[in-house]
Length: 144
Ligand code: HEM
Image 1: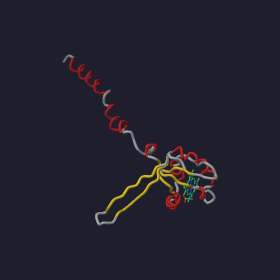
Image 2: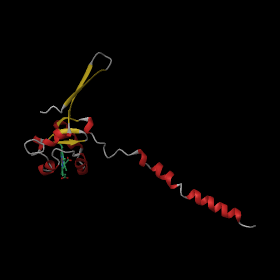
Image 3: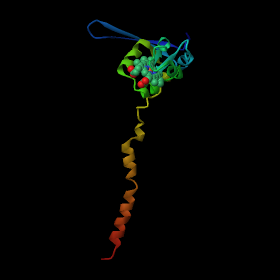
Image 4: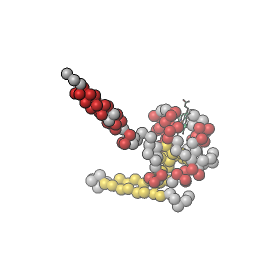
């Protein structure tokens, strides 16, 4: 294994003297990208890394589709298929760690606040206001 992987540990207490300890292994995207063959196959789904090598022969959708996503972010393909909750439950057994925070890209669901509907509505109001003003001027100048 290379030195680019990191392990972060977090510990906390529930206030009753019992300590909860979790440990996450972080992988860089370049580490995942190397595991892209039948011998060793990792993929990323929603920022989590899965080693699906031993799942290749068992995948109901076939090994071909997994090979296509080998070593890359398969979140979109995974969601496009509309996998069942059973399939999502199965993910847990192949989980090996998280993508390093510096390599995380925003999920497509997150929207840029500068491109929201409120702005579009406000901008579209700019055009008719001067027109209304000119119309009002013409009406006021008309002789009785
Ligand atoms: C570890 C990751 C994955 C697991 C655990 C998994 C699991 C499953 C399971 C249990 C099914 C049977 C149908 C269901 O229950 O939804 C299935 C079907 C399928 N999966 Fe995956 N899958 C994974 C990744 C992927 C990826 C990355 C693709 C990429 C396109 C994919 C494509 C498919 C396809 C095409 C089917 C067949 C759907 C059908 O016949 O209707 N799977 N998968």
